[in-house]
Image (cartoon, rainbow, N blue to C red; front, side, top):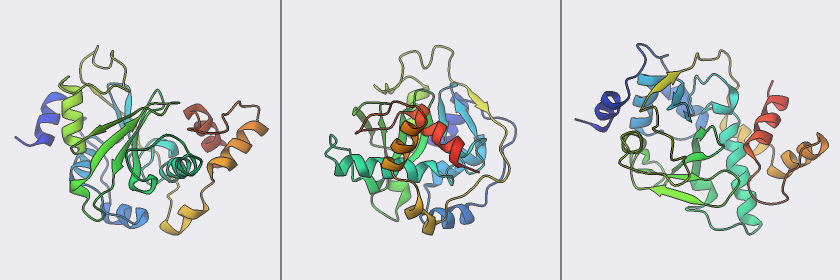
Length: 226
C-alpha cells in the first residue's frame, strides 16, 4: 500500500475534485512539483484537513491559499528580508523554502526545494506563527499527512487538539479566475517593508522585524488583489 493509499484509507476524499493542468501550473511557477502533491491535489481538491490545514491548490477558493497566487512569493520575500536583517536561522536558505500550505493559526508548511529539479526528493518544514520556532520532516507530503493524521507524528507547532474529532477533509468550492503569478512577476511582488508600511498606514500594529502576522497578510492580500 502506497502513502497515498494509506492517506485515502485514513481520511476519505470527496467524491470528485477539479482537474488540473499540471504542465501549465508548473510553467507558471517555473519549477516542477512533487508527484505525491499532484496526486493528493487531484484526489482531494481544494479544502482543509481537520478544519485546520489548508493545502495551497491551483483551484483554491481564495487567492491567499492558491499555489499559483501571490502568497508563496510574498512569504518567501518576507523570509528573505528577515534573513538579511539577522532573524534567527531558518532550516534552509529562504529561496529553497516554498510555502505550500497554511494553518488557521497562521503557520506555514514549506517544501525544502533541494535538490533543485528533483521534487520527489523534497522534504518539509513548518514554522510557528509569530515566532521563530521551526519543525522539519524528512519525508514527502503524503507521508507527512498520513503520519500526522494517524497520530504517529506530533508537530510541535500544531495544536494538541488537532485530532480531537478524528481525521477528516472538508472540500471547498474552487474559485474561478484566480490571479496567477508568472515567473517574471515574482520580482514585482511587494516586499515585507511595503506590507509593513501599508499596515501602519491602515492602523495595524506590525513589528519592525520578523514574520508579519497572518491576519495582516490576509488584509493586505484582500486590499491589493484584484
